[in-house]
Each structure stands twice: as C-alpha cells, then as structure tokens.
Length: 126
Image (cartoon, rainbow, N blue to C red; front, side, top):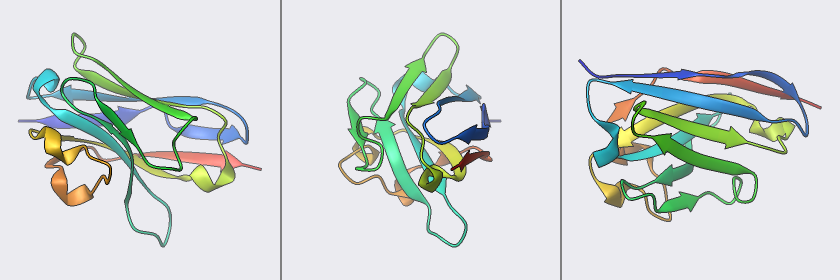
C-alpha cells in the first residue's frame, strides 16, 4: 500500500522560509518523477515545481528563484524548500509522484501524476 505524507507546513511571516517534507512508502522514489502542487481557496490546483528521476527540474514562474525541490532517495523523501515567502504563497501544498518523467515538463499538470499526499497547509502573513 503506497502512501505519501507531507509535513512541515505552518504559519510564517512574509519573507520567511519553510521546508516541507514528503515521506513516501510503498514504492521506491528514485524511479519516479516528483512534484509539488498547491491549491489556494477558490483556485485550481497548480504545479509549483517538479523533478525527474534523474533530477532535471522544472519550475513554475511563481517558484523561480525562491523554491527548490530535492529528494533523498535513501530516506525515500522529497523536500520543498521555500524562501522569501509571500502572502500569495498561502495554500495547501501537495506532493505527488509519477512513474513517467514526461510528467515533469515545462507545464506541470495534476492529471500527469498518479500518487498524491493529503497536503499540508502553508499560511504566509503580511
């Protein structure tokens, strides 16, 4: 039984940083593309950034220069480092995985990813 469990969310002031973790069980992460999505109230789920199994990364414009994705294949965990946070970054953040590296392209679409976590809330106050 596979499972993705996010942690590390919380409340932070604008300009601050957070690191989210996504611990994966049930499959070996190193063969999968991974991604972080977010969904703000009343908005569609959007891809923030992703990484292929060989660590090629793609970023949404909103994440460039501020967010970084990384993985620890020994711990089977994916990380999202978020710096210079803004109030508009407030959302529920989800990690996701796909067996296909093509899912991690210039456009990061939710339907390309098959495995999802339950999400963790990030709130950035002004």
